[in-house]
Each structure stands twice: as structure tokens, then as C-alpha cells.
Length: 268
Length: 266
Image (cartoon, rainbow over all chains, first blue to last red; front, side, top):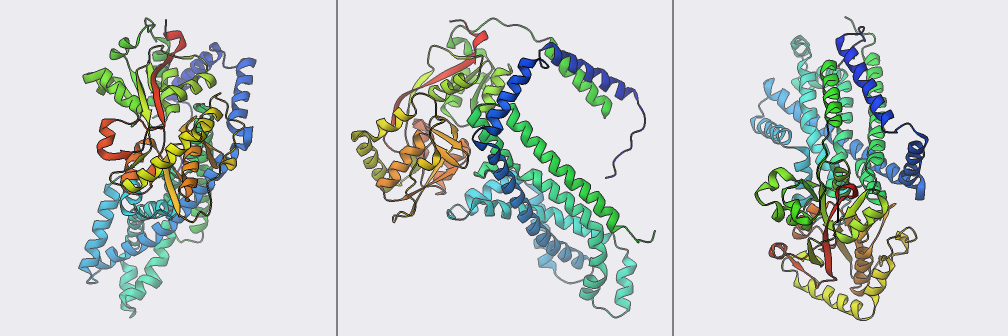
């Protein structure tokens, strides 16, 4: 999605300004900008993040979040690639009806149920007796397999976006279906889908925030653990939100750079 | 889109301004028709449900964490939070503007929960518990947490009996329930944690804490994900149908209603 450029002040902007100013006035009226409030903010900040190196809980949580997201992305890309190739090959005339049906069912089921429910089923039903297994690996598997269903559709879209003439040309030159796919179609398709894969990574990063449900101290859960320690509600959560946002913004920036780099030298 | 947000913002602001004053609470019987909150799956939720009857669908909000329920109370989203007395007292110490209604809602006993039919472990734990009650271990653990200040208690000082010959003892808990269990840094402290550590030692097993949400604990123990669950769990007849309990280790723990101090007249 391309960002919209600022196009001058409309009526919505004026309303937003009025609302913003009203909010500022209310904050000022409720003593938000007084020295006492600032001191209180600092005291709570110290309690939440500095005392006993509590920020390390967030750092550890972030490590766990990134570890799970990376692992799940790898699984997701592998599973997604396999699924999409099966589906595209079936459509392209390769006779694999059973595999195709399996892939279709997989995608339907995993996309048709919430990731949260899948995570709970993986942890409490399928891996119920796996106690010595690090729960993070279960989460990686659950998120990865879930992501695979979405990545499959991304890949399929990418492959199908390649003009049919490419395949026809490759085949008419004597390449088999497999090698046409591997050497002609997939390299071009990959170039199209890489930015979308990064977006999937970003989506996964946020999705792993439910890992706390199976007892993983990810970034979100780390914030909740600080809440339970200091009994303070807003600061830990806002801090967690800021950390997510900063990472997502950095990644988004990276994706747009990548998009530019990938489209260099493309005829158009 | 921008217009919509601006409109919503103005709506929220005007709603905040027009907030009306209500008469103060005097007794717990008034809570029958008030908005209440509790942590999901706790006895506080069951008490609130009984209290509200048919109206529980509209008046009761259950939260995943106590901190969320207390935040809702402070923001005026609910008028009272039903919870255990000791964690409630800790909230009162740390957070301004809250108080506990003088009449307790009920009195409960805490015990350790097991998978139904795991009699062998129940018996072993009961034996350990009665020894610990007799030799003063339990009293010493409770005394350590009595004054409400745990800053001097370090998780690394609790002996988890690492490398014990009898294998691991997996214990499920929800570490946001001081003084019973609390996550500090990367470790855990609390009455339940120290008690389980002592039990593990007596059983010659290594204690492994699995920190999960409270409402996931019964599922975890019944699917054998953990050997037992210890999280200030109240013994109820309903729970007895789905799991086995050890002997009580806390008797007469009160369930109380936490309210805003300026909303309560004794």
C-alpha cells in the first residue's frame, strides 16, 4: 500500500485540530502539565522500568518475540511455498488431485480459525504431554503453520501474476513443467512477493502477542508481568506499544527500500 | 476517515464531561445491581455471578488480569472488583484512592489442584504438607510475606532443588497474585512458590514453574501439561468435579469487594 500524500487542510483536519486542542485543554485543566504530575510520572517511570533493572524484562520479552516471529516466518515461507506450488501445478495441468485437495483443506482450516485458538490447541491438546519441550518451539510451530496458509496465498498470487506467455515460451523451448517453474516463473514471482513476505513478518510480529496465553513471556506478557509487579496499568502497556510501533515502523521503512531496490532496472 | 476520527474524539470528550455523580455505596447488598469486575475463572467471578443473578450478562466484566480489573474500577467502568483479600490489600498499599468494603463477600480455603485420579501425587503432597505444617515450615513461609513488602525477597534465594533424582515437578501458576505468586525479573517469588519448592524438596523432585493465565490452569492440569496447579486456588464443589485437591493450606481466606474510596461510606 502506498502512503497517501498530504493534500492540504480539509474540513476533517479542522475538526481534528479542534478536538486535539480540546483534549489538550482538558489535560491542562486536570493538572496533567503541573510539576507534581511530572514528578509523579517520573516516579512511576522509575518504578516500572528502572528499579531492579525491570527494563530487562522488556528486553527479554522482545528477544522472545523476535525469536518466535523469525522462526515462524521461516516455517511459514517453507510451508507456504510448498502449498502454493502444489496448487499452481495442479491448476497448470500436473495430475496431483490428492495433494491439491490436502493443500486446499490445510489453507481453508488454518485460515478459517483464529490463530489464538490454534495456539491453544497446539499447546494443550496436540503437545499436551510434551513437557520438557520449550513452549516457544510450540508457539513457533503454531504461528509458522498458521502463517504458511497465508503465505501460500501470497505466493500463489505472485506466481499467477506472471504472464502466462512466460510459461508457454519456456515450455515451447523444451523445458519441462518443473524446470520452467523453477528457473523461469519462481524467480520472477519471488521478486514480486518479497515485500509482501515482509508484511507477513510484520503481521506475525504483532500476532505473537497472544503467546502469553500459553505461558510465554513475550514482549506483551513482559509488560503484563511489570504491571503485576508495580500494579500500575498504563505505563508498561504504553511502553510495550511504543516498542512494537518502533520495530514495525523500522521494518516498514525497510520494506519500501526493498521495493525500490527490487524494481530497479525493471522495464516498464 | 479523518472526519470520522475527529467525530469519535469529540464524542468521547463530551461523554467524559457529562459524567454524572451517583450516590455512594454503603453495603455489599447494593452490589446486586451494580457493574462489577473480577479476574476470569476466579472465585471472585463466581461470587459476582451469584450476586448479580440474571443481570450478570450485562453487569459483570471479567478480565484476564487483576491489574486490568482494578484499572477499570479506577476509571469508573465498574463500581467494585470482587477478589481475594490479601492481593486486594497489596493493591490498596500501592494504588491511591481504593478501599475494601468492610463486610467480606465469603470465606474460602486454598488448596493445590491435581488431575482427577492422580491419587498417588495427592497423597505424597498431603504427606509433605502435613509435615511442613507440623515442623513450622508453613508458618515461616507465611511470616515472610506478612508485612506486604517483598522487595528484599529474591527469586534466586528460593531452592528449586535443581537436578533432583526424582525428576521434575511441573507446577502451573499465574504469577500476578502477590503475596502468593509474583514474577520478579526472570524468577518467581511468593507463598505458593516457596511452598511448592519445599514440597518438591520433600518429594526429591526439581520444581519447574509454568506461568500461565489463571483460566488456563484447570486445562493444563487435566491434560497433564503440569503435575499440579498452585495459585491461591479456592476449593469449590464445582472444581472438585473436574480436579482433585490437596488438603487446604490456607483456611478462611476472605473474598472482598474493592471499591473507590470516594465512592464508599462506611
